Length: 142
Image (tube, rainbow, N blue to C red; front, side):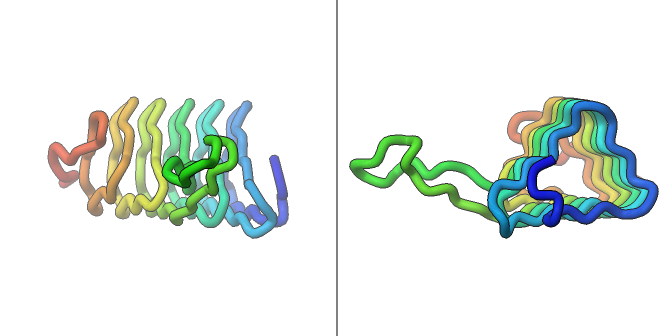
């Protein structure tokens, strides 16, 4: 756990073994709600802000990040490019299947399900079931 002062955990939240909560920089904030489960070996890579709601299930081997490296600054090597952060919000009553990747700037609405191995590059509506690379909605929960 990097920079524990940036972490807020709700009550009765469970983190399985090997979960990595990586807060990059002193201003990084990660809020995980109550009664939420984070599966083994999942990683949160946070530069600015990531929020996970209550009663949410994050299966093993998920990766959630709110930032990426720039690539277009002329004359700079890739390791000199600035990082760009965009907040991520994962609502309540959500299930992220095994190996889901959530990229910067995404909002996943309450009650959504994201299938195993999906890459979430854009917002997912409330109660949507989304799968694939990139994740796309195939139907809605009843």
